[in-house]
Amino acid sequence: DWQSPPNGPHQIIIPTKHSMYLNELINELPKNKNVQWVHYKIKNGDCLSTIAKRYSTTVSLIKKVNKLSSNIIIVDHELLIPKTINQVNNDHEPHYTEYKIKKGDSLWGLSKKFNVSIDKIAMWNNVDNKDYLKIGKTIKLYTCENQHDISRPETIQKVAYHVRNGDSLVRIANRFNVSVSELVTWNRKVKKQPELIYPGQYLVIYVDITQQYFDA
Image (cartoon, rainbow, N blue to C red; front, side, top):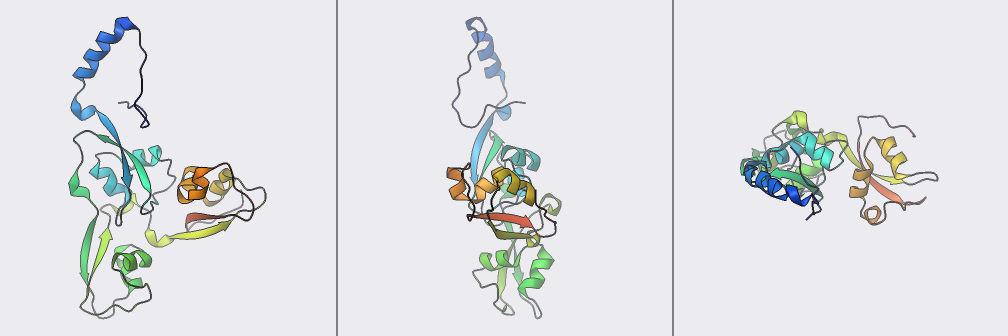
């Protein structure tokens, strides 16, 4: 299978004598093999596995197209998704579980039980992450279907990195085991001029706290 790049339309130049043959091939191409590119805005509860299933694609292909080095995705950022026409599966929208608070429950305990972060539980339910949970209250917990396809959210932390002399996006990306593309996505100022970073600048980086990081 092949697809044209997403930033079309494109012109294909071929010898005139082959144009009729090409048109015949295009007309014979099954509609379920036609590919369109979708700009998808990440929502609360999304993970790569559910997005991939919704658009009948794979986690690995989404990561490759978007140059993601990990399964970390950030709410309100965009992903470029290759989808087969007529193959959107609405059954795989982000889904949530309604959980009724019981005696002894805490945000920390629920984060471990449902494999999500305390901050996300607080955000989904419009509460402060230091609030006590009222017994009997029902809260929403978004979950991903295949926990093997995602990074464990409680191990991912947002850090502010102080750019030092001699730093470059490549060096910083290697140091924190992320991609240059992810650094650019997470930092809007850098997105406008990715070649310009300077000592003293702060960059947002999402890191896995279970890993060790070394200077590159």
